[in-house]
Image (cartoon, rainbow, N blue to C red; front, top):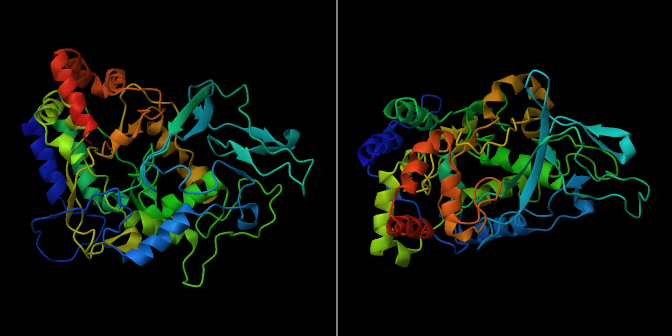
Length: 438
């Protein structure tokens, strides 16, 4: 564990490191501007407001069977899982994931029978809550997924905030790798966040450090959008063209096709996320003496080792995601405050689920599965920005107060949790007041 001086070194790395895997223009670093923040549905400047509103409408749009919904799915719109207090924010929605371990202790994805056992779904850990059949056209087909008795590893995962994700996407790989190395060195091996390189679906053969999802399974917002469209809504796209099951499916694949503007829904989803503002702090509460003392204590007991306050994005003009996206002026060279390191840690609450490669990246990446075994009991440090809008905390939503969440921390976070226990009651309240300001 380290205090504020140790964190200063990490933050400096986060601000100044340049990516080795991605190309940046030859200009010198300048003083970063501040990323805009607000729960106001306004663009951060990546696009004009009319375009952002149109993308927001697409994000909110309710899908139907005629659009390709299902055959198995969890939600009918992006907003359904990301809307508190505005579209793109947190929600109370959870998803169910399961699996089991074989005789050697290795995690194995479940085999889930549907249609009275005539079809078995494999290659994914997600159990969808909803299905389009039986219906009037197919009255005798039962598609509902249920957890087989063999799958003893069972966990819920809460939906995540996507506001401000464009700034996270624009953090360079080398920043995250340097942060992980410095974190481990400063803590003498007690806190060692892990990075994993994941496929960028829109740039075949390209890999980038993951930063989105509870297991860091995506690095690109377009890849993230395509994954969610298929696995949460059952809608295929050019990046994820294969249905989980074809039973009851009546819409030709890919179901997400370009509109008159040449963009498919996943393109609008990604552009919407890139153009959102960061979650703002409660300015009035943040300015109180108790919240300021709470931030001091947050740093002092070591929470900031993983919940890193400040990052700076790559310069405008930097090419990322295998050359498929160029960081725009509105995002480039911006300082933002997520209170996360976006690294994978074991804090004693890991769910045992390994990233299912086929589910997130498609069947062509099956050979990558063994490299993700380290994700079983590791989770991405959740960004704390906007946490004041969430009532159910931690990855599974089982912690209902900030104190509950802090006290659940073990493993790499044991030191910070122990120091929290030793604070006076007044100091604990000050730290929690700080969290309530985020």
